Length: 313
Length: 278
Image (cartoon, chains in turn red, orange):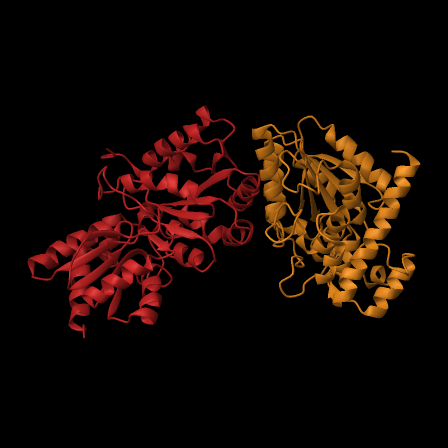
């Protein structure tokens, strides 16, 4: 249904449909509507889709004020400017005040590609995860994004959507049933659990195929919601396989790997390794180049998985 | 406004000062200076100009008020209690464990508080958002907001200023509590704001300077003028005195921002306000 469509187009089409039915929905950009694909909404909704200019702090608190008035505002920027730059506005005006604001950060981690280190958020999940009361969601494909939006709007509270803007490989089909608080079981296995999010899900599937050919049966969970974690699914899988690899397009400090490790060390400790950006800033490069350089390819996952397996008790 | 109404609002202002002194005096410490400087603005709004209903705090289409200088919460609580949003006796719970009256405004805890604020610079953006929402929904509400002069050193205040003018939010009326003092000294020695009126004018606002920010008549006249603004938000610059009405607090100068306040000081302040029996 969404093949060859960019994630930003899918967002724009979906939110357009939802705006027709729900006049509470507002879309606010900070001079990146062209990049985020939301510019076309302004013709149709001149009052409800607008720009605040390059002023993200004002955008966040303005949205909180609109939410206090009963609106459901979506605010958009590139990931670093939608999170770390406005972290206090998110913490106080949005999260502490429990306002129904949806924050979209586009181009997470290495997907910022040629914008390079300044625009490459390696810390956005870590920043927001430590603020109480924010749901953190990273859609893996267009079907998931489209199915998630109505639930995100229905959920009365702040949600951060970590959005890859371009064409994401299809993981799901039309029959997919989405629950924002439940992880997706993509492949059942018994030897090792791979917990992945975002662009790393596709690499994990490739890695599982390689492992399968070598007789290792990996289980894959798509952890689309990093906060709150689907505790039940993660513990169940760790109990079954006895070892874990996490794969994320984020610093291994503060992101999915940290969240899973924090949970398992307390509830069901098993050998665990984290794949992702190893605590350094990003740089200019294509996604494929940076995946290779930062050891985030399917082959890297295979290597780390074998290492973890050898430590399995 | 006739002289009887002015007299009533002046007396009300004095009474609200007494409630603030008691709130902070009972606790022994608080943001006394900046609470006392906003009293007349709050009284003019809540007892004269705002369309609100204490029996229905969430009334649709009501006017909103945001205390962007969130540390002046105790001044607003005194007004809300007197208006009947919650019992006057609750004022004694200021900053006690489990209180509904924390030192900075919290919309989730306190009836009548329209927006949480405390991290400076954010409340005015929230007010801009509300004014924008009111325009979209065409409910004819006015959105009022008080910012501090020290707060106006936050860059976000000027982002909000640009947006409000750009969106032509003539339903937004913001006051600057221009008492010219902040925690570390006078505003002009710490990080000068002057000429404040010219700054707001340059940002596209309808600016009204209120020579005496403690004159009910001057404030009220300014609000009436502000409501006539056709396509610009209004900034009312209130020339105020930090600690107004309690001479030893006024004498503290910048030190009155957050100051210890003993029971003896509370009693002598109430005497000075002719509220000795309160």
